[in-house]
Structures are given as C-alpha cells and as structure tokens.
Amino acid sequence: MKPQNAVHAIWFLLLSMHAAVLHAALAPIQDDELSDITGQAFIKMETDQIGSTEYTRVNLGVSVATQTNIDKLTLGQYDRAGEVAGSADIDIDHFSLGTVDDDGNVVPFYIKDPYLKFAYEGDKMVGFRIGFNEAKGYLGGTINTLTGNVPVLIEGTAEPILDKANGWQKFLGAFTGWRMKSEGLQQK
Image (cartoon, rainbow, N blue to C red; front, side):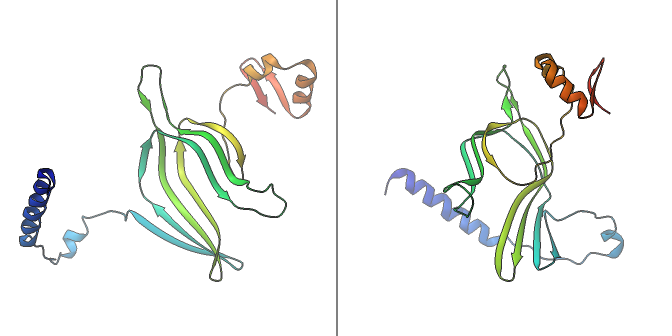
C-alpha cells in the first residue's frame, strides 16, 4: 500500500469511529415556539392537467450566480418528420452565461427559482422544460436553432438601427407604427 493511501485509510477509519458515537434525537416543539418558525422547502412540486396532458413541475427555491462557458450546447436532438435529419431543438455554439470584463472580473449570470417541468400523456413522457422564474445577465453564443417560447424584453433606443437604416426602411418602420422622437424610436 502506498503511504498516501495508508494515510487516507487511517483518516477514514478514525472518522468512521467518531461518527459512530454521534447521535441525535427528535424533540417535541411547543406550538408557541413553532409559530416563530418560518421557511420554505428547497424543492416544491406542483401538478396540473390540461386536456389529456399531465404536468409535473419541480421548483428549486434557489438563487444562482454563475459564469459558464460551453463549446457546444445541443438539446432535443432526434429525427422527426419535416425537420432536417440530426437537427436539435436547441443548438448553440460557444454558449455562455455571464462574462469576464476587461479587468478580469467575473460578471455573473443571475438565475432565480429554476424549475424542471415534465409533461405526460398516460405513462409516456411527451415533453420536458428547463426554466427560471427570473434570469438576468449576459447570455452569448451562436444560435443555430432554438425552438419554443422565448419572451425577450429589450430596453433602450433604436438609434444604432436608425443610424444605419435607409429611407425605405425608415418609411416601413413608420408605416408599422413606429415614429421618431428626440430620445429615439418609440411605438405609437
């Protein structure tokens, strides 16, 4: 046996013996003490049914700050009628959540209350979703394919777009309900 393995074995033996003498007991708590305690479980499960489809949602009550890079993110890749063979529901190259600024500081991507949602018809799973109740931060990548409902809120002015738009594009913008104001493009 190598000396390093022997040291690990000794530590494991000592910790095992120490853990054997530890014990805990449940103790009753009075109603007045219980009324001072609040909290929520880390995991909350909800079920719902719409038509013949049953849904199970697993809510994870956490807040996460992350900076993640993935060379290739591919989810839902299977052959189906009407689609290109080998295509995926989500196919993103150089996917990133969060970023690193010019000074080398991590600028995280914030996620609040992530969840997993499963859809069943009978005993067959027919859908799966990963989502967040809130998400904020830099999300980057080259999106090759993306299916589903992705609501996006964009704040700011359209000045960079208007600066490059030709007369015809500005006319079409005005025709579809957009107008110029001194602070930028506004919807009527």
